[in-house]
Length: 526
Image (cartoon, rainbow, N blue to C red; front, side, top):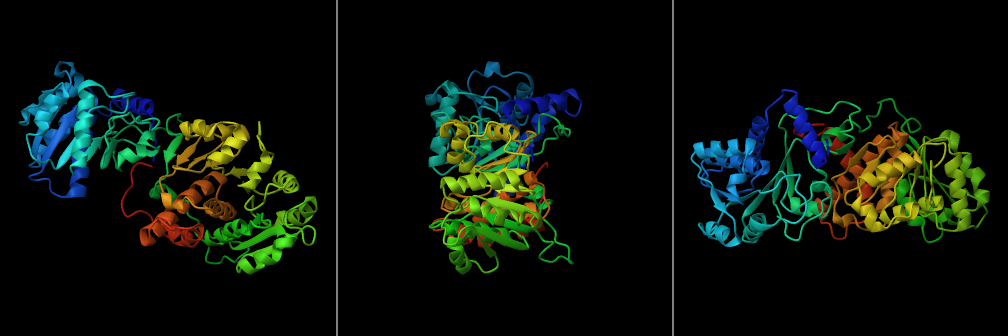
């Protein structure tokens, strides 16, 4: 599913209209009718509902007029209010207003908070409050009558009214997710054509509520188009990626993974990564660990096989472990390195040698990333997936954490190109980027996953999917989505508080099975 900026949305609107696919008025009509259809799907018959529709003077206000007229057709009591100078309404928005008038709606005008308050108090309660004040192109702080509309919707929300944002909640930047001091907090946002970045990026995501996308018939970008390089992962697209195992498969053909890591006190990380690789479908998982912690891993792991590397009794890797690790390269499909590795200088040097010498794709996480330092160019001649959280990304790039969060989608795209690797920037939301500029933003996962070991589970899942034959970009995006979905399944069953990485690891098969079955309904344009 596309994930658009405001400018990209305007470009698709123009292409659709200029190409004769629809007029601006027709797109506005489809959008407004789509909003009402969403409300009926969620809330059932709207007969007798009391709906307050707050409209700005631009095209978002025009969408609101279409919604108001459609709601009246459905038996609602509708009050439409223009928040601002009604003489400024022009073009398609004016046509929508005139159509609403013809349908029996007399828009009222409020230019001050007091005037709007008088209108809102016309009923003791409202069932629906609709935000059609400002659209995706709005920036900065709502002012004047628009600010009064925002405040009115905030108060209605606090009073128990369902608040529905049309396209984007007013006060939320549709590109960055930044919020103004006063912003609409919606229960539901209905957007058009495709979700916008600000719907997924915090803090805007918290103000969006649930998100629905209405297909209004926009032109679909062609392959290779600059628009469409960033997408939202949805169940429909992920279903196509889930590996289907040949009925004649055996453990050697179902994907062979080598996990490299572990040290004294950090054996849990490498054990989680190894278990996750198995739970994500790898048929044969070996774990290269320092000889001094081999017995600990042998006690922790059952299906995965620890391999002692390096000097007897050594609790961390040294240079002498390289040959034992490298001997496995011809026999595995993917190497995962970093979980529990430690920041010992000798272990870091070993990690750099393994990364450079591996003859199969390498997934790099945790102290494997720290071993890379701050790379200026390509990581190496191989094929790599890097999975940093914000702190690790800051060490890799020298950027402050705040600067990384402010560019959560585009920063990993730049790094992927610079390092010639797939980059998974973990967080809320996680973004997976390829060296060719493509990126996928992931919507699954929850705050209960903010616990130790979650990244290790993701590392193992990525490695397993690469080992089963997916490309590194596809494997990474599917692993991220399934990892988050596994967390959501656990949280739905047992609650988010107390959720641990091992729970997510054990839920990976259920998450992948859920995706393999596919969505029950079409989840929107791919």
